[in-house]
Length: 278
Image 1 (spheres, rainbow, N blue to C red):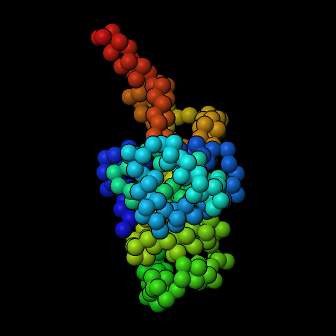
Image 2: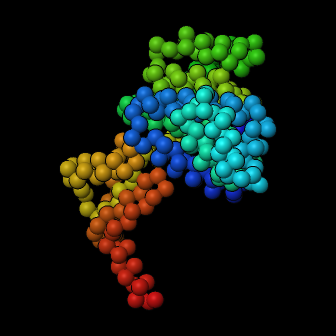
Image 3: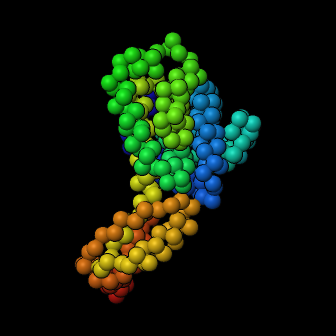
């Protein structure tokens, strides 16, 4: 049963931060189609790890040499998921509280990668809206819910069913996401799986939002320059949320992903005060 990432043990929570940063670097500079292919390979790797307890344990074994684990990852995924093997090697080098934590995190990263493809095409909002709409349709259609939850349909059969019902009505990214969703319940019920995908998509959206705090309003030109600078840094379009706070006196602070760039005057004064006190 997949758990929320926030419910994992302390060791895994630290690994998750490193894993998401590794995903950012892996996606940087890639086109929408390249990211879509990358996401597909992550889902392929997820399926392989999810179906093999020995493989999960071998890759997360803290007593095993990192080079040995890297070699194993390369051998297993060199054909089915070659472009993601580098990321998987990084994940294998991290410490996980439980072997399943790695797999749950990998699923989260795969969903985030698809959401990144949607972000590049300007359809991230649409993806979120369509995932939510799908959740409402499923909750209101008992026959569809049973079909997508039943073992009577194979994973591929569920993909085909969803494609027939929604293929022409949703974006390409949403279509791919729904295919992965219904064919990868991983021991959950359908509603829980949809919720996991919605939350993982929202997590990627939040990672692409920069909260800018400034003493006075900034011009449109400054806003565009800042957005372009941040986009170049992380390789993804970034949205700016501007907060006006006169107490910062001057300068600007920017918080995005797991980083904080604080160049406000009040922070500089605080730094100077600490230096004098030291």
